[in-house]
Amino acid sequence: MRQILGIIVVGLTLPAIILGLPGCGKNSHSKSKDKKDEKLVIPVEIARVITGDISAYYTGTASIEAEEETEVVAKVGGVVEQIMVEEGTPVREGDILVKLDDEMISVQLLQAEAMLNKLQNNYLRNKELHDKQLISAEEFQQVRYEYESQKAAYDMTKLNLDYTSIKTPIGGVVAERLIKVGNMIQPNQAVFRVAGMDPLIAILHVPERQLSKLRVGQKVLLNVDAIDKDEFSGRIKRISPIVDPATGTVKVTIETHDPSGKLRPGMFSRIRIIYDIHAHALMAPKDAIISEDKISSVFVLRDSTAYRQNIKIGYINTSHVEILFGLQEGDTLITTGKGSLKDSTRVNVVSP
Image 1 (cartoon, helix red, strand yellow):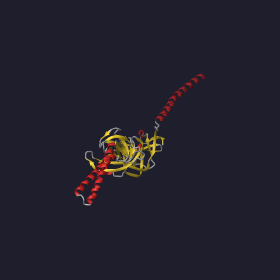
Image 2 (cartoon, rainbow, N blue to C red; image 1 turned 90 degrees about the vertical axis):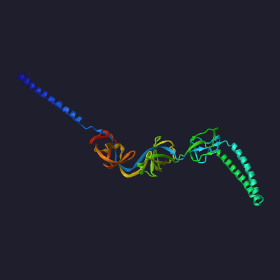
Image 3 (cartoon, rainbow, N blue to C red; image 1 turned 180 degrees about the vertical axis):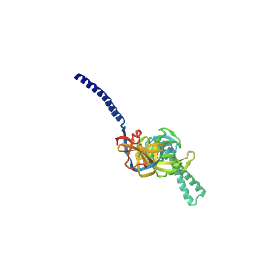
Image 4 (cartoon, rainbow, N blue to C red; image 1 turned 90 degrees about the horizontal axis):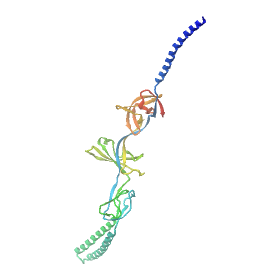
């Protein structure tokens, strides 16, 4: 009888255990599903809305040029005897660049001087006779004419001797040497090119519709590709009064001074002309702005959640955008990682 009862108890217990097993499996699957349903947290970087002055720019590109640049030419012919400077040498106005062989002109000057002395003595003697009315006026006028003609010839020969020392008419830097020692050069032949290094200019051709924003004296910022770490300042020096009918543009000349000597004629520059400034403006980093279908927006961070906010923007500079409405000073914006976000996305700030 006891054996029969034991079998019955075991038989009743096994189904209960078997029925309990499916229940355990269901609970485990529920926990896994809950983990998958958890929201993904996106890593982001942030920046804050600040206030400051922001400028509006007209931008363009141009090559740097020398305001003063000239070819130094020989005024007399001759053989190059000595070169006094080389390319890159700083020079001042009136410095001697080249000396020509002056032997022949020196001899001509001595001859002219001797003849001048002779005619001068003759002129003084005849003047004394004319004052005493011992010679006619015609005879005295002829003597005076000969004397004055010879004096002019002497002065010309002396000037030609001076011209054998070729001088620069402007100060600057020797940009190019066009001759060698021993060359025979002719009058009006170019021997050097000299460029003034201060000031330097850049010429922009601005569309006429932008002309109302520009005026002489406006501040200009220049960046040069060859000197990427420095920014140079300048101003609008002059604006042409004529619009080119072929291109619809106006010639605008930018002037800059560079005491450091880093700027060189021929360098390519990127130019920004500041034509307006908004003081104490709300500014957001450019990296935070999202532009889609002419609508600008940002993601604002609040309590570890990113909320999309439409905004209206104003002036834009190299790093910031003016905020006209939609944000307040101190708002925290998502700058990096915003491409993976949707409205009300949970985020994790990895770089404040």
